[in-house]
Length: 314
Image 1 (spheres, helix red, strand yellow):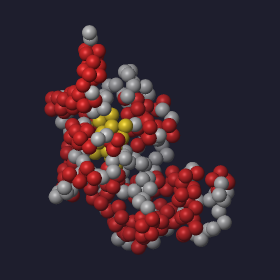
Image 2 (tube, rainbow, N blue to C red; image 1 turned 90 degrees about the vertical axis):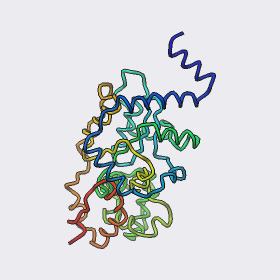
Image 3 (cartoon, helix red, strand yellow; image 1 turned 45 degrees about the vertical axis):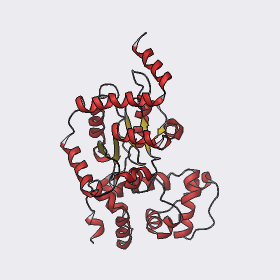
Image 4 (tube, rainbow, N blue to C red; image 1 turned 135 degrees about the horizontal axis):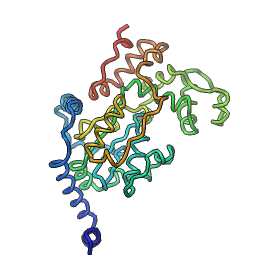
C-alpha cells in the first residue's frame, strides 16, 4: 500500500482532526526549516503593525466575524481578502492551487465566477478549536492599498459601472440624498443608458454622513481594511501592498515555495493610480476631506501610508 493510500486510511479511520494535525505538523516543519527569511520591507511592515497594535488583547479574535478569511488546507494558507486590492487575482490563484499540478493559469477563471462564496472554505465555517489551530500554524497574508486610492477605485467600479445590486442599494439612495434626484429609473439598464450616476463628491458625502453607518456597516468595497482583516488580532506572516503588487506576490509565492509552479496574474493597465488622487478630490470641500481622513486614519497608520497633507492642510 502506497503512502497516499495509507494516509487516506488513517484519515477515514480517525477523522478530520488527524488531517488537521498532520497538515499543521507539515507546515510547522516548513516554517521552521524551509521558509526563506522575510525581506526588510516585510519586517518593517509587520513591525509597524506591532507598534500600533501594542496592548490589544488578541484573544478577542474569537469574537470577530471572519467572513473575509479564505482557508486553503492543501497549502496551509489563510488569505484575508480586501475588495479593491487585487482580491480577484488572489482568489483566482488560490483556486488554481487547489488543482493538481501542473496548476492551471489563474486567468482561466472568469472574474465573476471566482467571487462566489461557495468557491472557498472560509475560516468562520470551522469550529473554534480548528480556527485557532489554523490561525496559529498556517501562513496568513493580506494585501492592502492606499485608503483614498482604494475609495476612488471603489467609486469607479461600483458607482460608475454599477450592477443591479449597487444601483438599487446605493446609487439611487446617494442620488436621492445628496442630489435630490427622485424620478430615477428603476431599471439598471435604463439608468446606465441615460448616464445616471453620482459624482465622486456625492459618494464621499455618503461615506462621511453619520447616518450611513447608523443604518448599516459600510459595504465591504469601502469598509476600512482593518475592520475586514483585523491586523491587531491576527499575526500576519506577510503584508503585501497593491503599490508593489507584482514584487510582493512573487516574494509571497517564493516564501510558499510555489514561485516555480504558478504565476500571479499581471496587473491591468486601467488600475487607479495614486498620482490622480488630487484631481479626484478637487471638488471635495476641505472639511469633508478631513472627515474622510478621520474615518480611514487607522488604515493609513497601520499599513504605513503617509497622511495626504496636500489634501488636508490647504
